[in-house]
Image (tube, rainbow, N blue to C red; front, side, top):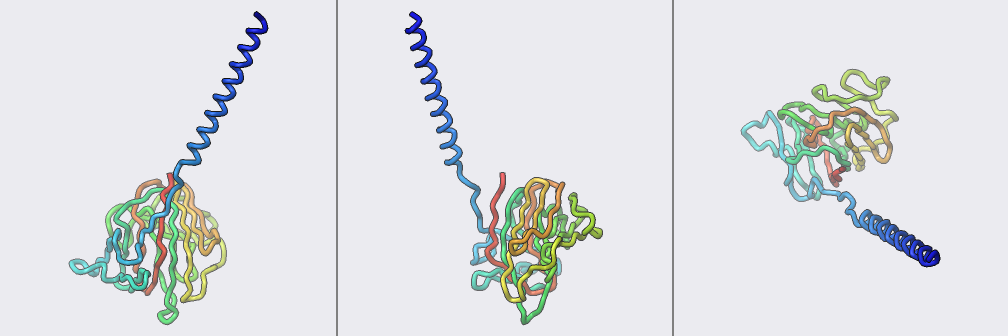
Amino acid sequence: MKHTLLATLVLAGLAGGVAMTASDDAAKATQAAAPAAEWTALFNGKDTTGWTAFVPDLKGKDQMSVWSVVDGCLKCAGNPIGYIRTTEKYENFELELEWRFDPKKGAGNSGVLLRTIGDDMVWPNSMEAQLHSENAGDIWNIGQFPMKAAADRTNGRHTRKEHATNEKPLGEWNRYRILVDGGRLELWVNGLLQNVATDCKVVPGWIALQSEGAFIEFRNIRLKKLR
């Protein structure tokens, strides 16, 4: 009787172990099968599908005329002042894009507006990832957008980047990697983390590219949703 009971307990233990192992394996398989977040092209390289323009000086006219698509690049004439923005809103995301200024036209200014909310205006409530020549990586707070940045580098709405400029010479492509995740904002310029903001207001908003007085080109604009 004792031997029979012992054998029964041993078999039950083995069965339980097998069941647990199978369960663990199934869990691991499920995790492995879970699709990773995918990149989505915000600019298709052919036209401005998925974007809309706001250029107040062109009210009643073709506001998209400031922008053109040539050889897979999104080109901005720089004037009149305004912006092009996504038609879809995004809350938590990783954004990558490349930009350059034309050396023949000189250095210039632009910016990437993040979590843009409210009415269209110059300029709308948002967080700006600066693109002014030699200032990429700076943060501008537009419309008192709730956020916190390094106090020692902040003057009013402007937070200077942490390191010296690492932009490439005019005419060469630069890369922005922008992380907007919960209350955190990170600006990476050509692989270097240049700025961080925390306690940012978490809200779905548009992504916009400024037309701010200078010719500028963009390409390889893509986004990966987070969460």
